[in-house]
Figure 1 (spheres, rainbow, N blue to C red):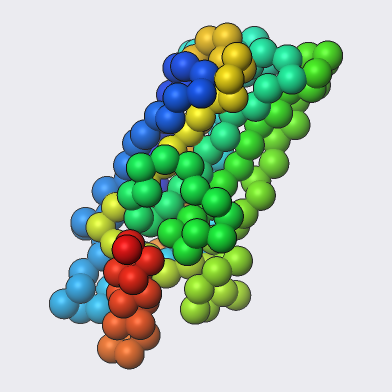
Figure 2: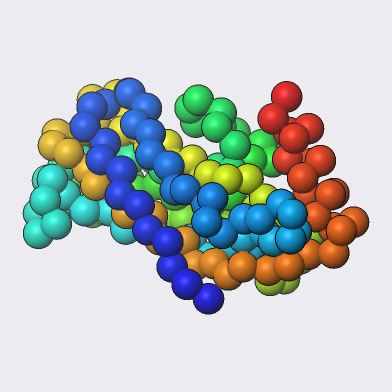
Length: 169
């Protein structure tokens, strides 16, 4: 197992911010190799690594983050098959507390759900957004994907590839 990381910086409220994780070195169609995602962690930080994230988010607002295996061009609903993981950071109305929750994990979907989510696409897509009026300063979100490379049987690989292609339409 290994860890892939990418940082996305949310700079404006009500505006989607994008980043990608390149999987081209890990997925090999000819050898039926896929990336198996075991877990995804989201780390929220302020404008710099040492800033408090609490000062970057206004009271009664949130910062949202999603990881997908298809480029949807923005935030998606939880029933979208491309959604791999998502999380949110909420700041209370009084501004006294922060609440972080990861509301979707890779083992919720797909074949091998006990072990993780299989991805055969060449990129993972990250989208982040602060709610309207919510971003007081830059919010950095580091996405940490714990994964491994697996070789699938021909039928399993084709089923996942076809499902992914069908979900793209």
